[in-house]
Image (cartoon, helix red, strand yellow):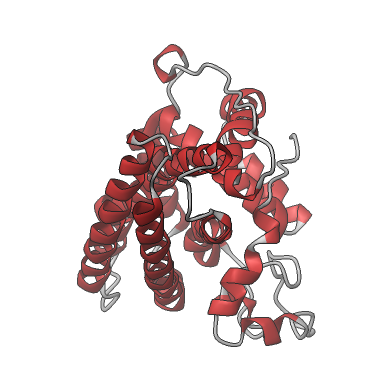
Length: 312
């Protein structure tokens, strides 16, 4: 599969700075262990699984780690671009396009991805865990946290839309507000992801068979359709190429239906690189990027397999 090259790897220090002790743990990650780690040494943004005594070793560990590693990298890029975005856009059209592209990425990609992820957890995955006998996993707190984060993301969305409406010009106040909202949201979101990784994998190990997990993932894919995969899959693969061992990355690819892998190669990944990442990273660029996106109509493509078609 085509290697996905993005600027996200440059931003992971932002996440590691947030994780208590994560940076100090990286050097000791290579400590000899009897368990096969699925992650490359020092490449995880997760402080929970960067701990050398708790490396990711099975699907229970990666069930939440896979999307979380992607989301943390997107948030690192979000913070980097937000910090680079000039506040004064009154007299400089260069600053205006930076603000416009960045705001468009926030509304059309980042917020969509965030809402999809939490909807998938609330409506499909966490209920599956409860059905399998997982108790005391704090599902009410998870849902409450999601609602609080959703309120923050809705505020961020409104500000980003106002910047787009003004085409990035005379947006000093909105950009300042955007910077403040991003900082607060990322802080809360990182804490939330960490809390999930500290508790939910152990519940999976104790109660959930792999078949139930696979069926839930199948329902998530079915709910989002190929449009959802177009948003999520290329970023997940880009992140996994950074953190997963080569062996585990190939294992991940084998769990994806071959037609979807082909779509990722032909459409999803090129669009992620040349369109989504270009808008996301615009504030860090000196020249206005040419946005290129391969036309994509999910209704014209074959549907992903239904959950009941997933092999045990």
